Length: 529
Image (cartoon, rainbow, N blue to C red):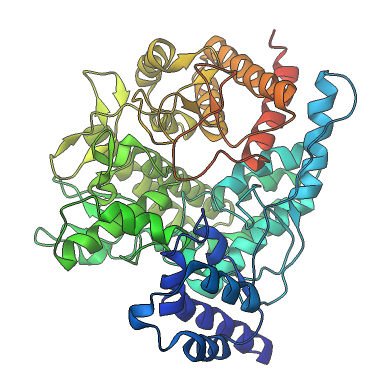
């Protein structure tokens, strides 16, 4: 290991200790910042040890650390540089025509692009290559966002940037044992929906030597798969779950979302503590389970949704680790299929057969436990009740996207989508209306992409075209009204801003831009009216 790597690892460790410090907890619970992520992303102006020392000198005599907010704020301003939101275009030029939104997205790619990082005293995990951030409060790369961002970057001929992002993820995995939620130290205990193989597959057609390229990435794809399957050897009738793997009643293995820590999230520290206070959890074990379930929902990317709740309107009832998600298992099925395919191309027939067998076993388990014949829809599976969850969600289209579903299943799913999810502005996220952002009336770009592509795989082209047209109209309509591209949209009332969740709706926005560009290209190539 080089001297530079030693210094960098020390910086990361120092920040992790800072996130567990009394100073950090005091600031985060003081309500100085409306968004806890601001201080979690702050850059220390000097060594943390010196800051701790100065903090003790200045406030050591205060009983129970009852410090006035103004004094604490002044201390923070003296010793920390606070982050700013990503600067974005506020005014567009020209008339309200289609070219304006295209031009704006091209300009946004430049504004959202982040150069390779320099090591600093903060939670940022320095990356060796350039990357795209989503926008707004999200000042770092996010894992599953990047697949949808890449769809647009490739349409903009920014192939090298997508390759850089893939290399960044591979570096993160090599350094930390997983591809974290984002490149922040406080994300190291969890990942996000696995899309590394999908990113590589997007890039294969652009390579002059495709086999050589696949050979250079195959180990990283397999390492990620093994991360998700950690602990499966320890599963038994007495130990039916281990980290991200669960033993189903018939002996098959499926996956769930998880987080290796069971403490308040540093980036939502005050929010988590305040939410816990609304519960009746009194034991340490109950409180830890609560925090882990909050964190696990963040690994899903759906933070938060009625999918994870015991009571649809109560975030305090969150129970993510008791849910086997249909989207996660569909993506892992796709990863198994791609690993089998890639190893076949590399003439490693033993591993190719192994991963093909894994995919077959997973498909059988998904069909047995997650397909509802009664509803004609794929559902999450509740490990406590040993039955399908009652929450219908757009996660059900992932078996179509990954070509796991049968033709008969795809036909039934398309009918449910058309009758229950399709609204004037596009697709609902779930059929449940709640205060969470991954529920009705909100719609999200990633789910529209998964659904449209999934429907096309099964020749449901008319419905795919309708969904595409409505979603593009929603994005364009809101853009011409506000000059903004948003993180999410209200698909029931297109003039209304989307809401729900822990923070204000963000603008920018990486995956909206990417999916918009990719769908516009499809409209043109398929001559959709």
